[in-house]
Image 1: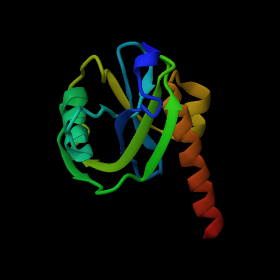
Image 2: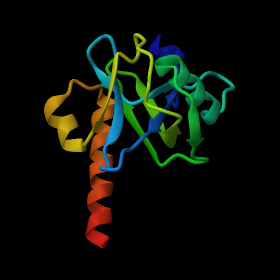
Image 3: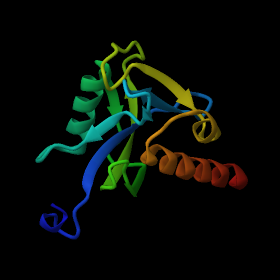
Image 4: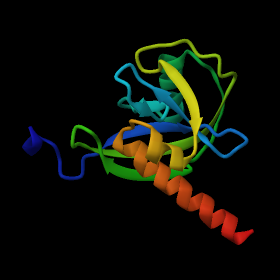
Length: 144
């Protein structure tokens, strides 16, 4: 199968960056016990905004009130299936956090990067994002 995939192929995943007032980011716990960033794979022909609205509704049954026009983060990583994923993370605001559990979202929580490293079972993209988020937070605080 790998020979059928073009060399430049990446699965594109749109993810929501939802932060609280303590500069922690939202993760969702899937039914497999892993914590993940909200969002998912972009469908063919779908815009990132449409994809995020759809994914958040499918995962949590929540409505978005704001999605940034451009991603705040963009990074690539090999996922747990050893497939390269391009992650585009957009700042998102939700109507509420009163989610309805689904197999993709059994629980939600806000976490700091150190909490992600030490306490959670997460996918590789969550670890990669936590490192980027922590580095940017440190860079911002050193400029103040």
